[in-house]
Length: 331
Image 1 (cartoon, rainbow, N blue to C red):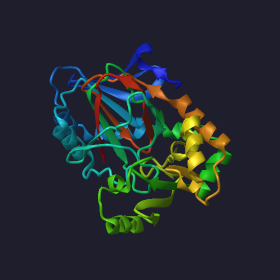
Image 2 (tube, one colour; image 1 turned 30 degrees about the horizontal axis):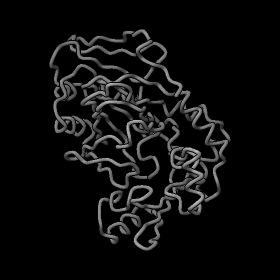
Image 3 (cartoon, rainbow, N blue to C red; image 1 turned 135 degrees about the vertical axis):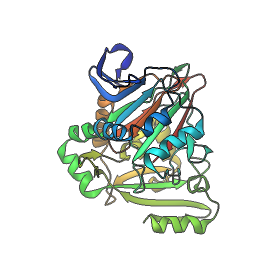
């Protein structure tokens, strides 16, 4: 992945708070994330944030990403309290697309894919109309090697995509077709967090998701946004996961093997334009290229907390080795 690495870039100081408790800076040529670093030992992030809520929110809407470094954060409960104090109600990872485990309250593990697997840049749950506005990652333990969380400015991605492509996605939206199975993807019981078909049907009806039972398996079809206007900044952002769900995102050998045994409509995941017409491979290749071009990557330090405006900033994951623990909460 083409990216700008923080370790090779000189820090450029922006501001030092009057209390000398924190320092704010960005890195030359890498405008995100804004780093807010504690300048004294054992500064409690929750207590500090309660007195600086406006500062955090203003920077979050401007930069789209804040990295808190050197603060005392504590356990998972305190991380959840920090998020709740900023955003009020947190949301469950219901109708998820990747395997996660619930730790406590509304805090989850990060995506539980094998460590050698990368996760492309995306905005969390942008494949649905019920997406979080904010997401935070707390690095309890950094990996021995790798495991960075690349991020990218969704406003820049929108600007760089060909206007003809943008207009088509804005007009038509994106159709997501999913087949749930414990053999090839997540089972519907895991995704909807229930074993009751009636509960699933009620969820789908309320969310305007078309559904079909095929034996004990489920197929859903949902048309969602391709781009959105940020409700506070009024900026247009690229906001979908067409490139991630499309069958072309698979390794060629995996894709060929699946298509050899399944019909296209039976694939675990696939995307189309909102009217059901195919998305051109060339369009998806261009979108992926721009994501890679805009990617910024920094090495985690244990105790870091990365806070993102989910509409303004996409995120991913690089492969890693050794143990790694990053937990997630969404507001």
